[in-house]
Length: 470
Ligand code: NAP
Image 1 (cartoon, rainbow, N blue to C red):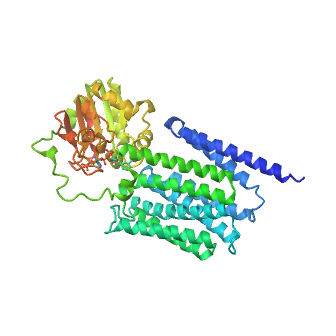
Image 2 (image 1 turned 120 degrees about the vertical axis):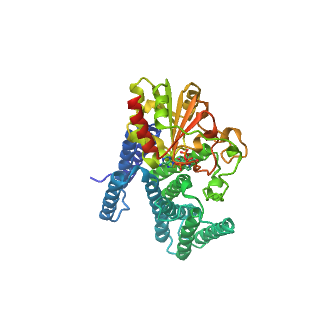
């Protein structure tokens, strides 16, 4: 029995709508740790429906090639999901994002090759969509590979800059756009190749001057690029699922980039062109008003443990140092012991604590910290005035009061956790070295603050041992 073409197309489009609903519901559920796991499954099911529907296309010439591609992708995907460590997640996202962009660029190039054997064969809108996909997809591919290299320490993490770099990059981008216009106007294959190469080089040059610590913002930004490139490839192929899926990725990547920028009080332009994260000139850190005649108070693990054990409420503030030291399990043990003594324990999570969005949530979830104990910035700040001890574990910038009080500070305006409003503050870090922003933290000179120096994991373990003896 043959199915009428119109009916078959309607069924495929219906399946794409089901797939789109799955993707949207999946993303919605990813917004809470409680529902994220099921969200992931729903989105994966939506994607499976989209792939199955695409299999009915009459334009497919080789099913085996597609099945082989899916098999290779599945093996790599499953292996990396199981083997890659939580701390290496940002670079894995960079890599996967990059290949998405590369795939969109290849689709554009292949369709251009197929539809434009000679000038005048392509519709204007298809040409425009192909150029956009090739341009944005290639930038995302090579930019993401550089981001991967920096995070994996295959490339230096510091910003790689040279004099006149921004002008050079602007000229390179202008040339790349010109190649896109030439390829579109002439429909000549060589211009497409030149466009792809120039866009790849531009992607590398765009990311090289950005410091390793800013890579999460860059990856999220390039993720938005990949989404737009995929949506555009959907227009080239007249594939609704690709258009919807790509647009969702483009929109969520854009929103995430904006939210991360806001939480760091930095504009995207500052991240992309500011070469932030360059080593501070010698002496820059040690200078400044905060150190003038002010003293830092040290505390022993025994004294800090006693203070916590007799507290009514303790709020733990985790940061990048907790991730470096892998202190999450020891921290959970500390919290359990305090709770067993009747102390109320909460965790205050700053949106950009650590080096990627959700970094602290992922680590604490790994240690099975109950979700209700995790407070976000807005929930945590009202708690500090009624908190006896705020325990800052490897967090620095996200607690710096200069963000509230010092208009000269690079952090000024960044929303912070107001730990200085607690009755006592205990800070666990190895030295007086600054954090990501490279600046002094006034908190350490506050008379309420006591420093417990040492590796975060070792210090928390010492606190656990000491509490047993209180
Ligand atoms: P931070 O300001 O970078 O400070 C981390 C502190 O941890 C350092 O001062 C360091 O001091 C300490 N530390 C490092 N290793 C340690 C160890 N093994 N044991 C104990 N302490 C250790 O971190 P944060 O407060 O979490 O703030 C995050 C920063 O990253 C913000 O400036 C944010 O804007 C930026 N950022 C975040 C994201 C994101 O998505 N989360 C993205 C890009 C940038 P010592 O060396 O003295 O130990």
